[in-house]
Length: 144
Ligand SMILES: [Zn+2]
Image (cartoon, rainbow, N blue to C red; front, side, top):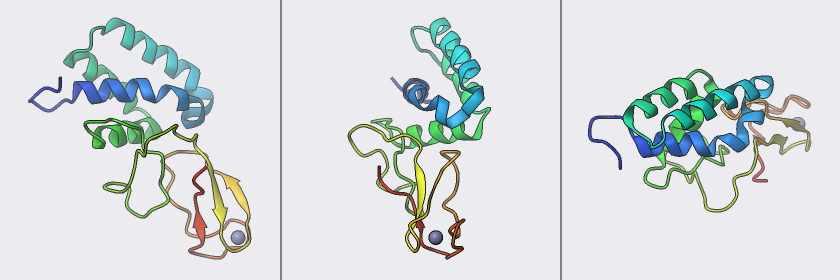
């Protein structure tokens, strides 16, 4: 039920729903307030329509992490799965949204020294070098 004039109602609602398990990790202390607002918009715009999708787009667009989530979900049309891997250089067009449970925002791991550290934001780019041993180009995100 996507409309023809731009806004992808189905995709926006899918993103609004499937972002919810990740809000705590994506937004930290802002997650609860955001969840309340999201729930309110979802409750007020049932059944989904373009006006509701526009409100959800605005809401998700307020934070980089949730905006990125929305973009990822929309780019996975028609399945609208959240991106679960960002270990590759290309954020778009890669093998995102593989089937199965989506891992939480995870950790970075250095391939040289094995040092791991948490990834604070799902939208964070791949680090250029290990924060521990400073070896460049060996940091990867494990697929946990
Ligand atoms: Zn290292």
